[in-house]
Structures are given as structure tokens and as C-alpha cells.
Image (cartoon, rainbow over all chains, first blue to last red; front, side):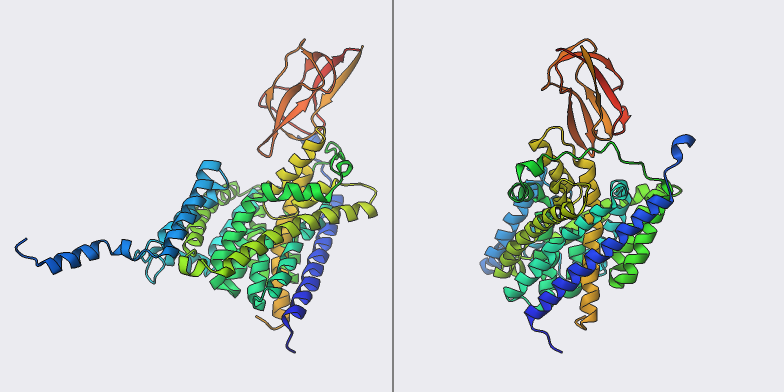
Amino acid sequence: MELTNMQFGILMLVFGMGLTLLTLYVLCWVMRILTSVFKHNKESAE
Amino acid sequence: MIFLSSDQIITILQGVVSGITALSWQYAVMIIIGLVLIHLGVRYNLEPLLLVPIGFGCILVNLPLAGLMEPHGLLRYFYDAGIITEVFPCLIFLGVGAMTDFSPLLQNPRVILLGGAGQFGIFLTLLLALAAGFEKLEAVCVGIIGACDGPTAIYVTTQFAPHLLGPVSVAAYSYMSLVPLIQPPLMRLCTTKKERSMLMPYTDQKPISTTVKIIFPLAVTIITVLIAPLGAPLMGMLMLGNFLRECGVVERLSRTAQNEIVNIATLLLGLTIGATMNGEIFLTAKTLIIFALGAIAISGDTVAGIYLAKLMNIFSKEKINPLIGSAGISAFPMAARVSHKVGHEENDENYLIMHAMGVNTGGQIGSVLAASIMLAVLQAMGLI
Amino acid sequence: MSEKTVTAPLPGLVKRILVGVGQKITEKLPVLIIEAMKMENMIYGRAKGIVKEIYVKEGQNVRAGDKLITIIVAD
């Protein structure tokens, strides 16, 4: 399947932007889970 | 003159001044451009760490007959060793990772999405470059200017369009240093006075536990490399640097990554990028188009970040000041400072810097991720 | 007569303290400078009155929300 240049560009836009935002959304949840599992408790130790 | 005939004397004189006679207009123009870059760095303190070596490299390579970029030329060795192999950009990422504190991002995880919106310019520019007649892979490399990130641009361009390396990387670095000039007018254009003056206090932020800071770079590495394996060198080095910083037992390595390694890599990378600015290759209409597209790229990043911030405000109770949206690019910490300054000018009770830092570090992850994902998509399409 | 406590709006280093105890200040007068991310940020008292107490020293690191100064507000 040979893509025209414009088809290629639009595919890149959709997949590139979409997958980037999706992965960042996953990372966002990873951060939320991490910060809720490991609460900061050094205050008393310091 | 008993030993030499007048013909011989003329030949010798011609040999002595051959450098000057070989100076074509292209070389002369490039030498002037090199001087301008150095002037901007030295006189106006505009990214001197980048512009000074780039400018000097540009002058060196455009002095005729010096042959620094010919086979066995000094700069050719640097180029083959560090740029072709991608070693320099990856070493810079190691240092950047060690310099970056992800705490503001971890305190407000959802702003990492703004770091994705800040990559929109990549794809917008890619489309425009295709429309302007660039080949597919060339267009990818022009688009990557929108990552606002020198090492990433060099990493991608070296692989797919090495002949565009000079213009693309110089455009990426130039626009990175122009962020404080390009962004503010666009930010004001896209926001209302009320939006800009919105307060975002930082006082209710909880401190982040050391455990989280240690796990974060590991988690990001594993997740992103599983999704986009071709980005592993960049993301791996960035997160390794950050891990060295946060794990707390290798402070020496962390300091070396932040100082010596990044300094050496920046110097050699800048010099070698300057050396790709050969007049005969650089001074073409294509370069002008690439610079024009680069300006669109960073504008697209800025506008997309601001509008995603506004969009997030529609769906979320906790409002964010749309000005921090523009910090979702990789230019660190300039973009965060710009958000802070524009917000502070509008309302002097507004101190956005820490929030903007969160977005800005998100932009660093975002730009590497977007580049890696582009590589993954290209591979899936069978183009590479 | 009421009192107003100014707190640090952002974490950073107290670069300079621009007022002294007992000094009369106005809303527009910066009271100290906090340096964060290599940027100097002016902190204003936002009240007309007299400085009652200063809680920080130059060169000290502060966290967001830390008390900086207290002002006796003139009515």
C-alpha cells in the first residue's frame, strides 16, 4: 500500500498525537497511583 | 631574486593567498552568519552555551581549504564519533535528566497532558512540510523542530535526512532561544485578561516522597520503551540521568552528568552542528522554508498547549491558568519562565513558576515521547 | 488596627529583605525578594502600615506558605 504524502501526514498527525497523549495519560495515572501509595512521611523523621 | 623567476614568485604568492581567492560568496555569507550567532550569544547573552560553539563551528567550516569537515578533518571526526552515532545528543539527555526535578509534575500529574499538546507543532509542521513539497522522511525531520529540543531534532534528523541536519538543528536551537520573544504575544492573543490573571496558589501542594521520585524514572522508562522501543536511547538516557539524581547513592555520578558530561557534550555538539552549516549546502531556498516552518512549529506548540489547558478547565473542577499550557514544550526552563512572567505582568499576586515547571518537565517527557512514537509509527508503516 | 501576615507564594531562597522592623510600608512597596528557579520574584506587602516582625533571614530557604513578615495595618 503506497500512501500519498498527504495521507501519510494525516496518519502521522492522528497516530502520533493520539498515541503521545494516550501514553502521557497512562503516565499521569502512574504518577497518581505512585503518589497515593507512597505518601510523604519524612516530616516526622526530619 | 636570483634563484626564482618572476613566474615562480607569482605561483608562490598565489599559493599563499589561495585561501582568500577560494572564498566564494556562500562562504563569506556563512562566516557573517557565524559572527552574528556569536554576537547574539556574547553581546545579548542569548543561549551563549549553544550559540558560541555553533557560531564558531560555522566560521571554521566555511574558511576555504581548511578542510575541517573533509575526511580526516578534525570536525569530521567529532561528527562521525558523536553525531552519526547519536552519542552526543544522548549524553546531553543524561545531563538534562540529572538536572530535572520532577516534583512539581508529580504534585499535579494531569498537567503532563499539556506536555503532549506542546508537541502539536511537530505534526502541524510535518503536514505543512509535505504540502511544501518535502519528501516524507524529510518532512518528519522538519516537523521535529516543533519538539523545541535540539538533541531530539538531531537524533531524528541524523537517521532520516542527514542532509538537512544543519538547517533543522540550527532552526531548532534558534527557535529554542527565541521562545521568550515568540511565545508572549501568542499567549496574550489566545487568552483573555481574566484568564491570564487567574491565581494558582502553590501553598497547598504536598511534598513528594523520595520513594515516588525514585520509582518514577524507572516506571516512565519501562512504559514508554514498551510502547515506542525506537525512542529507548533518548528516553533511557533522560530517565537514567534522573534516576542518578533521585536514588541518592550516586551523587558523584549525578553531579558529573549535570556538569562535566553535559558541558563536554554541549561544546562538541554545538561545534559540530556549526560545522554542518557549510555555505554551499546551507544557503538554499530549502533552508529558508525550514526556518519559516520552524516558526510555525513553535507557534503551533504554544497555541495547542493553551487551548488544551482551557479544554481541561471545562472538564475539571480544579481550574488551571491557561498560561501554563504554553510551557508544555521542551525548552527548559525558558518556557516555564515565560508563563510565569506573562502571568505576573497581568496580576502581580500570581506566581506561576512552579506550576509552569511541572508543565515544562512534562514537555520534556512529551517531546521525547512524541519523537519515539513517530519512529514507532514510521516503522509500523514500513518506511524505516 | 489589624495585623496581616505575608506568606511565601512560592518556594525558594530569600535573596534580599528590603524592609526593617518598624518601617512604614505601602501596598506597592516590595518587602523582599525570593529567588526561585534563578528568577527573582518581588514579594509585596499589599497593605499600608508598619512592619511588626520579620520571620526570615537573607539566604534562607523557604517553602510555599511559610510566614515571611507581619504588618500592623493602618486603617
